[in-house]
Length: 76
Image 1 (cartoon, one colour):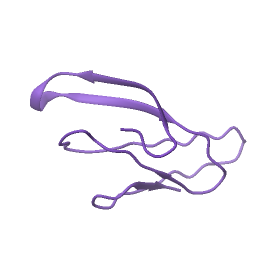
Image 2: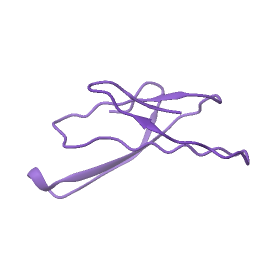
Image 3: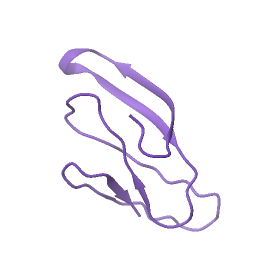
Image 4: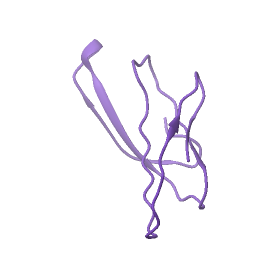
């Protein structure tokens, strides 16, 4: 499920049972600065999320992920 204020654009699945994988594409407008990336899974998973920040400005962008158990991943 998309996080707060996100729009899910696509979701694809491949495989089945314990050999399945999926990817979801979500976006939202956000102001400059730190943005919380969140969402929910509808079932058990082995690993979680990747977030990418793209800025239209020419500035260098630092992207890092700080995972915490049962918490959103913060990208700054």
